[in-house]
Length: 174
Image 1: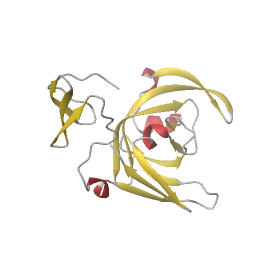
Image 2: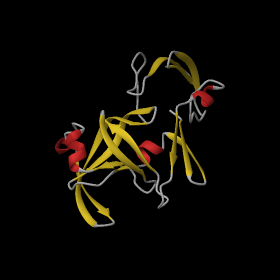
Image 3: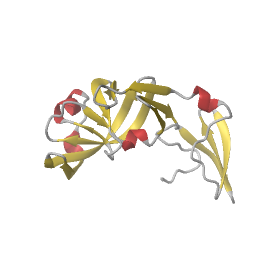
Image 4: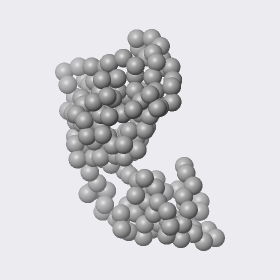
């Protein structure tokens, strides 16, 4: 949640047109939408737009892991889908390749399967998988290198996820 004034917008491209006693009018991708106080807007899309929302199909590998190519800030990375990871997580060398100045991020210590490690919380400008590009995605850069980046919940929460056997379908919600 964030406070946004009339006439300004969010990094995701939502602009506030006006506010009255019990509602707000916003512009979402060129469409005006009225949101009423108390109304829970999970996804502001036009009827039929869900069918047109960008989707990603990922096939499980022989070990049952969902791996896919993508980019962070335009730099190529290999992702493993990890619903147990709070954030998109990448190693030091991938961060440097993507131009992420993690030393300006918030220092943290993280518990991993390999023990406690040093890390930095950052905001990634863009994370792209298939035809879906998300902006301002929370991330973590680990001090050590990793064989792949983790596609964590900071990306996945903005997707509708459905698994059908060995296929994972991700559809962009917002």
